Length: 386
Image (cartoon, rainbow, N blue to C red; front, side, top):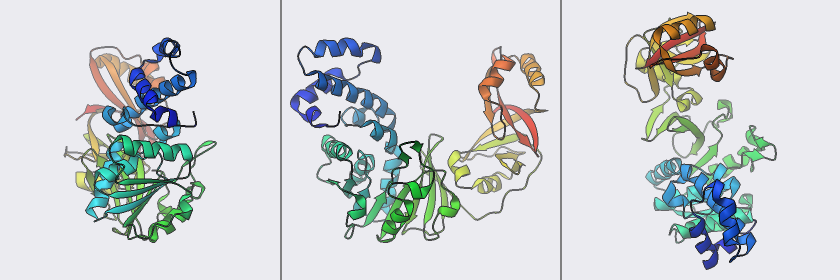
């Protein structure tokens, strides 16, 4: 379906209410029944939208997702509500009251910004996407604060707005795009647009090379529930600052410009830094705060002799250290009666599922095994969450 209009009619909305929560196994029976009274195309559109709403719950929560309108790409590429809300609060704290949201998609960020009291011009060049953004602002009672414009963002005048937010498309016909200059629009254009506003935020892929971050930008990596979601280049804040922000919270670790941590022998505790900390290259800051060092110069595991609380890493107590050897691991797990085995890896080519099949864990106890390198040598560290 290339048009949301039929779903926005009273008949379309009534159908959406009727098909809400339809399980995939029941779709054919529901469609057959509804097609007796409604056009087949409208029934298909309603069921397709119900499916997208179910997928969107993870990002937007059930209450909003059940009222919003989605496109397949919109569900996939929109910002998670918790991340959008955090960013909106940061912009509000900077004194931003009006903002141009360029490449707005289905309006996930525009919704969070409007809920923070910021007036938004939301721009997208795709007609269906812009229609979804408009329908979403209306469905959530935010139409007074969100103006949606179908246009090429490179031709929009953003003068008069306190801030610019740009979320370039990072997917092409062949999937994910890794070169920032292959974004649509390119990162270089987005940076120039950002420099023309008092404040700006550019959403980029978490894997952006640090050398691609402009000197006049602040770089922030954001994770939510332990999963790295995005990186943001901020302008008009603190040039040169690097930060890792963990949600929920937020908890923010600021870079202190530390040199790489020393490599040391494995201590009693192993710390696994949050992905945002690793992407932001702030493992040294975590190691210093924990009084620890690295187990290997190329591996982002921190080891220490004492347990210290930190929100930026998960701590494990290490009980055993073995050279990589499946037979020895299998014997040790059998002796300990380990049936619940968590396998983590960093710097190892072995797949966790493959290892689990070989060692055949069995018993009432649980353990975590780290497949990694210690001072260059393939190693297995066995332990449990501290």
